[in-house]
Amino acid sequence: MTRFTRAGAVLGALTLVASLALTGCGDKQKKPEFVGGASSSDASAAPDASAPSGPGGSSTPSGPPLTLSPADGANNRPVSTEISAKLPDGGKVSAVTLTADGGGAVEGKLRTDGSAWVPSAPLKYGTRYTASVTASAADGTSSQGTSSFTTMAKPKSTVGSGLYLFDDKSYGVAMPVVTEFHPGIPKKDRAAVQKRMFVRTDPPQPGAWHWVDNGTQAYYRAPEYWKPGTTITVRIALAGMPLSNGKYGDVDRKATAKIGRSFVMKVDNANKKMTVFENGALVRTIPVSLGKKSTPSSSGTMVVMEKKEATTFDTRDDPDPANRYVTDIEFAQRLTWGGEYIHAAPWSEHVQGRQNVSHGCVNVSMANAKWLFGKTRIGDPITIKGTERRLAAGNGWTAWSLSWSQFIKGSALPVPSGGAGPAL
Image (tube, rainbow, N blue to C red):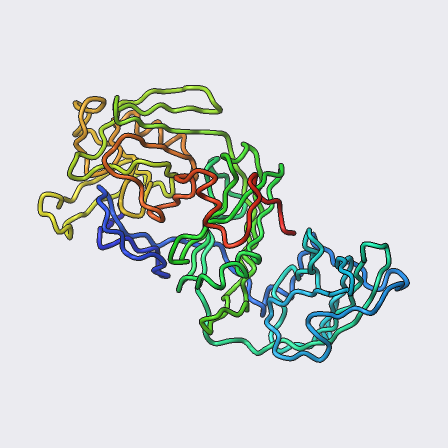
């Protein structure tokens, strides 16, 4: 049985979000696990075979010479460097071959807008590279150029990062792509960082990023919940990326995950009932007891972030003596960092559906808690309405607690009204 405390909402060893002075019936601490990261010292040695580079010099140049970036002879380039070119009358990069001294070709992909070519893994530190680039102009002419450059030494000061998505896992339809940073990304760097956070979905669904105010989290979602069966492929390509605060991105993180069936929970404080829908069909109505007026539940759309079949809520450090207790809990499902859960509450079964008595959690009967626990996945949504408190941004994975028009305002880059397609 796991012991939790309520000593402030701490997002793991990275301490990425400030303590949330929010009421919750469970713990406020969490030490999240993140997907493994690939640094430039190990990832570039194993190129992504699914991302072939274009063949350089495949046609006879018919236009003016290219101006390449990095320029020929450039030194101390970051290992996040992309290969781009400029033509006098515009045009797009159409093919790139990048080779390391003493090594083979580096794998990579062209950006969908033709603005640059992105290596599929971080370049190696302190290494000389040669790029051969072909670009095509609007009039059909093509130009070529060659550039040799050297990457910088490994930096000492980095930004910690995290990605809450794991290979081969199946998630609920509201699972956002969640990235975290410590310290937070400065506002003036967010557009450049966002350009290096790549998401692709199959079947294709447009999406957008949204930054929380302090830059410690960014969420990616679509205008609507993901389609069941969607595959989400993510690369947070920040290894060696320079930031304005003198720090650099720590590692690249990648994951490919699946979205399962649709399972949606809705709670209305007016009737104190939870309605549960599976693949759009109502499958159960569950009486609930929400937070009493002094410790109300949050209204908004949350997602299941963590599941514990058995745990202990220990709130003896709460400043209010009335809220201090130690209680064994079964079938607990975390909704917020502040300590709100869905969980079994046999002590309140006699008032469930009629009265709110909890410290902020969604209390259900033992039988209903066990049934829910067996059905839910991480990323399944629950919407609560009609309580005395609104869900605070960043108190959990709150990407869906905003309308789409509100959500895209948090992007550091312009977003089409219907969402953007993949950058790679």
